[in-house]
Image (cartoon, rainbow, N blue to C red; front, top):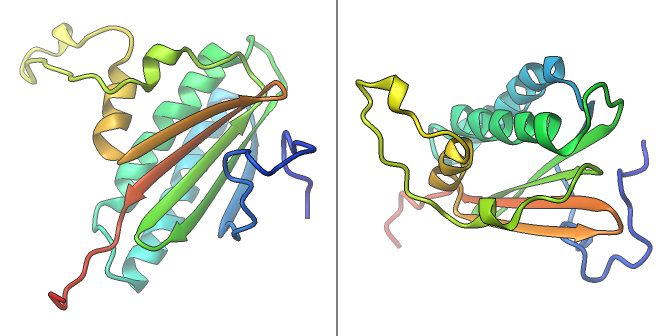
Amino acid sequence: MSVALCQPENQTSVLGEDGVKWHLSQRISARLANIGPAAEFFEKFCLSRSNADFAVPMLGPDMNLVLSELLTNIVKHAYSSGSQDKIEIRARFQDPFLEVLIVDQGSELPERVLKKIEIDFDGDDLSGLPEGGFGWGIVHSIVDEIKYQRTDGCNRLLLRKNVFFNLGGS
């Protein structure tokens, strides 16, 4: 068992350090080549739970896209090129949510990306895709809640997605 990345001394108010068990914990090197395999592994984790419970059918592919977007941003913008730094990905199911925690030691996340933006573009004209923030617009459209905290030189991004639904009508 490896020690968590950016483990703070005082954990009482740190995102994701509430003592509740994480079902998945994965650490990758901050390189673009690692993003695809990490996102696919995460998708399989989500699909395995979706098939076992009454969860959102598109959970796996949606969260693959979210994770790919966020990890790409971390590698390209938070870390300097050629960095050998790590990114930690954790996930857990806390009924009715899937919670995902991404921890890195890169540059601080700009506050503007945490604000939900509306993306308006013509799907037939891909040359008109907006520059900057488009990936964050996708993330905001898929997840229900995003929390961010910078603690002791670490970025902690917590995502929550409501994934369970009641078929019984009660």
